[in-house]
Structure formats: C-alpha cells, structure tokens
Image (cartoon, rainbow, N blue to C red; front, side, top):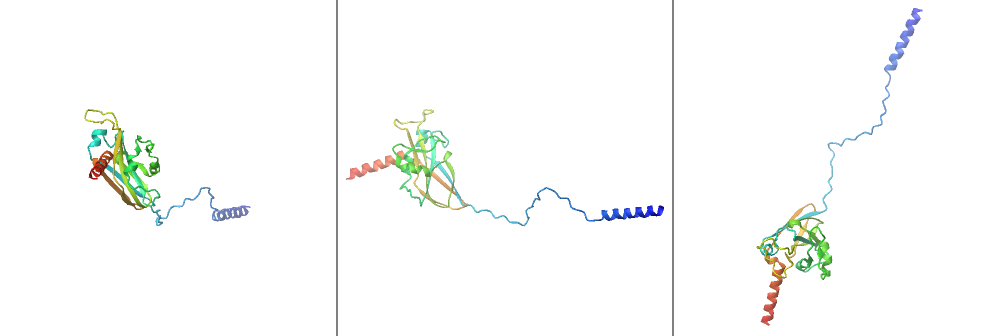
Length: 218
C-alpha cells in the first residue's frame, strides 16, 4: 500500500512539473500599440508659397502736424497702402488720384471712396490699412506696384499752435508707384518717407501755378 501511494505521489509530481514547464500562452491585451518615430526618419517641410511685404511710411514734414495735428497713431489720421500686381487687369497711371479720392473713415471701418469717385471703387480691393504707418502683407510671388499715403480729417485744435484754415476739412500725402518684387519665403522691406511736397494740397497748388504760367506764356 505504501509503495502504491509513493508511486502515485511521484506520478502526480511529474505531471505537475511537466505542466509548469510547458509553453506559456501569451496574454492578449486590448491596448493599441504606439509607433515611435524612427530617429533616422526625415520630415519634408512644405516649401512656402508666399512672400511677405513689410511697408513703413514716415512723415517728416511740418504742415500736417500744424494743420491736422499729425501723429502716426492719431484718430484723425489713417495710413493706407496700395499694392497692385503688375499683371492685373486694372492699372492706374498714378496712385495719387486714387488716394486723394478716399473718404476719411476711422479705423477699423472699411476704406471708402467719395461718392463722386465711383470709378475708383474697384481700387479698394488693392488697398490695405497700415496702422501707425506700418503694414505686413502676405503676397503671392511676383512684381507689384506699391504706393503709400495717409489721409487726414480735421479735428478741433487742442491748443493755439494748431491752425485750421477756413475750408480745410481734410487732406493727405502720398508717393507714386514703385515696383516691388516678392519671392516665396522671403521678406521685402519697403520704407517710404513722405514730406510736405508729397501733400495733395501742395501738388494741386503746384499744378495750378504751372497752369497759370502756361496760360500767361501763351
């Protein structure tokens, strides 16, 4: 009896040992495996398709300071940039006529033309605000005609140094078009100095004076 019990215990021990040493079935999990990026993988950056134009205008004259209390951030002063592709269907002989027909609207209201200047309304699509005289514009590569201006609205003078002549209700100054080329991924800086000689009143006065001289010489 003891012998049979001994062999039975040995058989059970052998069976349990064989089971413990058998193949282990892996546990099946539900987590989604995370793929780590390869340290040698290269990421191809998308090349830029546009360039940047940074426009700055600086007024160095005196007349608009005395007459309209000009300051770059004044509420009655609005700086404007016109950017026209050179291959655009719409072209202007000069920027001055478009700028001088702007009706003063305070920022951030939309730019607007005078009621009688309906022919210049399509040009508004090419005009951009330049708060404080600075504008940053994203453009497609190509060549552009660029000009700047500020328009002024009369305000009550804050002190005796501000002179508002009778009949003066607004004005401004602008330069003529200059060609700027935009390259994808590049920044072009366009700085313009405006003086009293760029003022619309000065230009009109000069044109009238030249016309009088021409009539006198006939």
